[in-house]
Length: 233
Image (cartoon, rainbow, N blue to C red; front, side):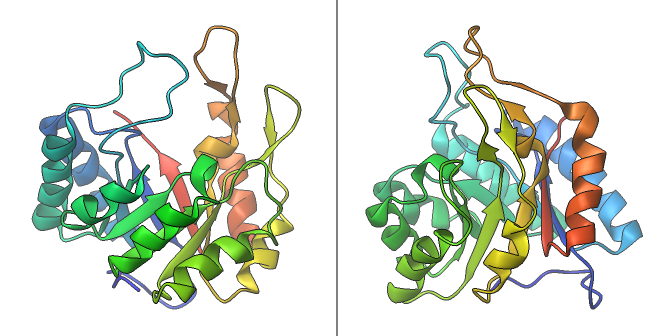
């Protein structure tokens, strides 16, 4: 598992950063600000940024600035601030490329059952963060984790990101956090994505950002190992 700075016993860790890398200057400013906050509060920190968003609702939605360019920015964040980095991969052939630049490979919720993707990620030796599909029970995530472990990699984290509640909403079942913790891996609560309101007729996902603080506090109260929060300037 990756080494985290500022890791006092019993404290949660934080994965935070922009949805997708939009440029070097913006990524560095966001990282610097969060590093300042987390060092003051002694919270272990991982910088999050997708190098490409492959699952946008509409074809004209922004997907990224170019894979290699974005991955090099993630590497610069790591080198400049000394914090681990995490990014999504969407296909098995992306695993080796992304692993050259980041510390943690993240499996998107929609893809958490894709065996080839999980095995390819596992074989890089990187820590693998698997996001729970909105369509899966917490206990079913054991099988996703097992695919990584059986491919030779025990460095697994699991992320709760809400469960489908009708066509345009998600709900968080906090019982799933201790259930997934019984597998023996760290469990993260994705606060911001859990508050999404997907499948809007505009093709743009909505959400309830006013509840971010409430959901984060509830996750900490339940005993989550880490929080995942997307944040921008």
